[in-house]
Amino acid sequence: MRIGVYAGTFDPVTNGHLDILRRSLQIFDKVIVAVAESTPKDTFFSLKERVQMLEDATSEIENVEVIPFSGLLVDFARKVGAVAVVRGLRVVSDFEYEFQMALMNRRLSDEVETVFLMPSEEYTYLSSSLVMEIAAAGGDISHFVPDVVTERLGERLKRRGRK
Image (tube, rainbow, N blue to C red; front, side, top):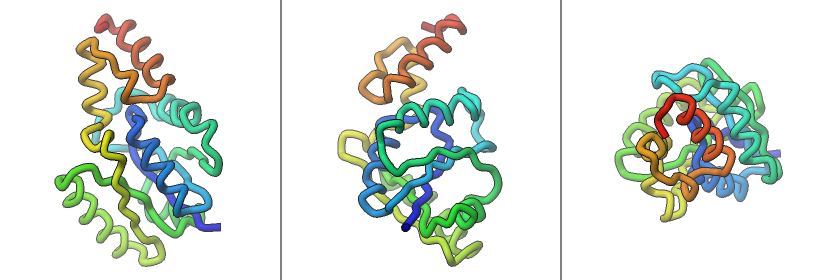
């Protein structure tokens, strides 16, 4: 079984993330969505909330498992038996960072490759940060994220008095 690992913060998961996940399932028999526990970014949702939203959003997609992780991604990938890390590339600026990370991961472990996938054209502009900005300003995010995210983000913003 060829396993791929699709890692990220997913704060929150977007339809662009799900698009990359579905595309990766055309290459791999199984994809593990690795939700980063520690991140240089401050997250809006807790690790538990991010994992739960991903589990809900992927519940009808076969051969997907959602697992939180910490530490080096290549170590996690080896631990779960993955042959590759899946990364999405939306724009040219993504490439520079992702290329550096892929080379560093290869240096740390030549057993795990990096596979770059481009999203559908409709998702090339989409990011979690942009979704959060739109939601905080009271905009409709329902076309950009799974229903579970629309609901949970709306609830959270109402509690904080933003929406």
